[in-house]
Image (tube, rainbow, N blue to C red; front, side, top):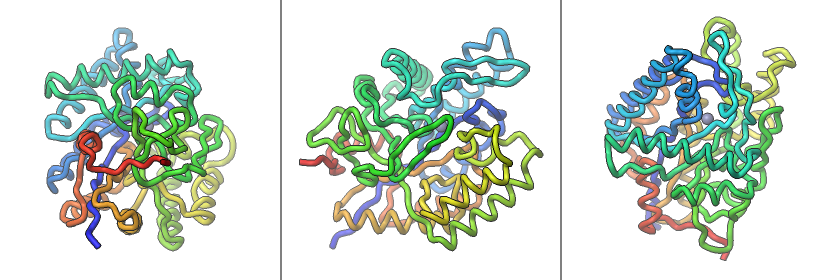
Length: 374
Ligand SMILES: [Zn+2]
């Protein structure tokens, strides 16, 4: 049997906290430089999904608040410099920024967190403004730059009567918002991907519901962001150490803690300990379902993730398969674990590290099989 080549994309969602909290120096600019240094050291090229609504909002308020202008300028410079070094920049949007106030140095974001709850016109405006901002920023560096990939804020893409058509109209080649078996039911986010028809290989989605596979060729492709099942031993061990360090850290600095789960929950109720337990330990014991997000995993879990990817890739029998991982720069605690992982994949014979733009190119060349129901 011939080997499967895994075209692996490391895709960072680059942003401050979901409520607008956190200093972009700590959550974005500095960790991005550190991450890019690691990528460069091992000769791999990765992708950053720039969350553009934050940036557009900083620009909207920069006249009244000059320090927001200098932060927005540094945001631009970070993106351009990372792109200049060969890494990819693609589109990510958190619509809660669409209605915001800035008072006493703090953001109050009033918009709905899920883009599928907006009107067609509002969603179109969010996406086209974001795409235009990135293209205007990066075309002076490379005139061929195009926005070709999208990941929705908080993964909210389906079901929606218009999202996939809008993305296709804007020239987006593929979406990476689907994560198999993911389910949220919080005050801010409700999504149910527990019965996705495909959660590993690229597929043509039903245009009104990316959870389902179409029976024909469509104008856009979905590539799920990877998930896996960690062993009970490692997930629990990892989680206990995370809870420990989080509790000892809470209140001591401004770093957004807890990753996306606690970011989205209603933080007004319940002690932080109980919240951490409910959001964290319970699902691990029950299902051990993990998003393949390098900022949330330690090295032993990254190894388990890679074994799972290899197992599933080989089972397809395909010669080439794209796999998309996540990272959230704002949540990274252990650069050493990420560096060990990057070192491993940079020398693995069955893995080719690629950018999102490279995946789009290969999709269009026909390198990857795209699943449909026929
Ligand atoms: Zn995000």
